[in-house]
Amino acid sequence: MIIVGIQFSHAQQNFNAMNSFFKDRMYHTSNRLDAYSGTSFFPITEDEYNLTYKIADTSKQYNSFSYTLFQKHLLEFKGENYYLTISPVFDFTLSKDLADTSNRRFFQNTRGFHIEGDLMKNFSFSTSFYENQSRNPNYQSTYYSSLGELYVNHADSTYVTQNAVIPGAARTKPFKVDGFDYAFAVGSLIYKPFKVLTLSAGNNAHFIGDGYRSVLLSDNGCPAPYFQANYRFLPKWEFVYMRSKLLNLTRKPASTSVEAYYQPKGFAVNYLSFKATPTLTFSLFEGTIYSRGDSVSSHPVNALYYNPIPVLSSFLVKTSEATSLLGLNIGFTPLQNWRLYGQFAYNLSSSGIAGQIGTRISEPFKVNNLFIQLEANYSSNNVYSATLARLNYSHYNLPMALVKGQGFTEGVFRINYEWKRMYADLKTIFYLLENYSSRSLLPTSTIAPQVNASVFHNQLEVGYRFNRKMNFSIFASWLIREESTPLAPSTNFFSLGIKTGLLNQYTDF
Image (tube, rainbow, N blue to C red; front, side, top):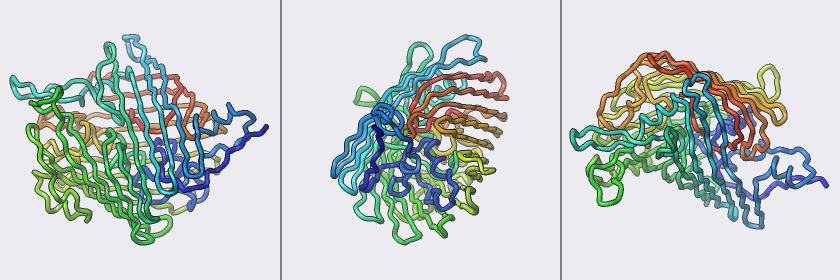
């Protein structure tokens, strides 16, 4: 008996997954009007761009096991007014660093679940939970540990760093001798009362731009609680209003609870987009970090935090209360299969700048399922810094824009190819560090040592993708990383594993 899928008919508002596999598929097309060309404020909903339909596996399956393995979520429940899916998420990877003389075994052990649902025609929800233990290569574990929780040393009022923070995930606690143990959850509630208005709230990461990186807002940081409204008030205009609560991982010196609280701060985004043509979009970005207290006390956020008028708050709020990043995002598809994009960011308080230019090319030389991306990023060494360090453009002590923070120039080359269910991904990244410090955005006034160096990062991954809905694959990867910093160890990292991939976790820094 042949088993085929049935297309679910009612509208869906859930978010498309943000992993690079899914984002690349959005831009990968042989018809420029079929590719995504919207506001570039991610994640986007399924009714804004039907990625589920685009990545569907339409092969014929002859039994329920292969149908579930290749085309479905593990559990799917459908009714007249609801649709619910439940799937496991996991990453079981074993690795060996051939350049590590200690002969250690490295691993990633991730288990969890992912649930999505649609109710009636205008309400959707999703939730995911991840439990993790890992032992990482030296360059990663050193970076994670350098950005851990900050505690006040009462003897001399300096700060002591404890534990670590994993980008895109959470803070950690120790696991065995040199590993990390961490867990986190993400989720959203989405309601679309009208065709022109979408409301969402939850705990999630966001990304702005068509690039692999973003100089405005990236999912490199940890998930944060947020509220968001997308309003399409004219055929060519759309406005995104997002408000979020961020944390500096700096423990207050005194507390009535078991653990002292972290420093809170507010984050306000106003994002106005104009779709000049079906293939050209301009967007104006304003991202403002608001004070909600210092290392001792807390206070209500400034009333302008709620202001929806772009740019206005940036000029009215004092630097002791807020710091603003203004920016521009441009996406353009001039020719079939070719996407151009760029960004610019300017910090009003520090006068720092950051910029991006890049291109995505689908099926060059008429090779089906081949994709190429070229990108260049620049960040001055003060663009994400504030007059008060606790108002730096950071969350959980991690940069909220470019993965490496500020003070560098970066070149990115990516190419991936699929043949049936087999795939190959190659990524080459070059950094030129300019008065750089990985700790420059920590919420303290401590001046960290700065370096001038270069980093060369190459990674190849090949695998077999069973299920495109969950990005479920078996894979082998090889990472070579060289850093010119004195005493920096080389990395020659080989991995084998089986994983799903819905979120991004950047390790190419």
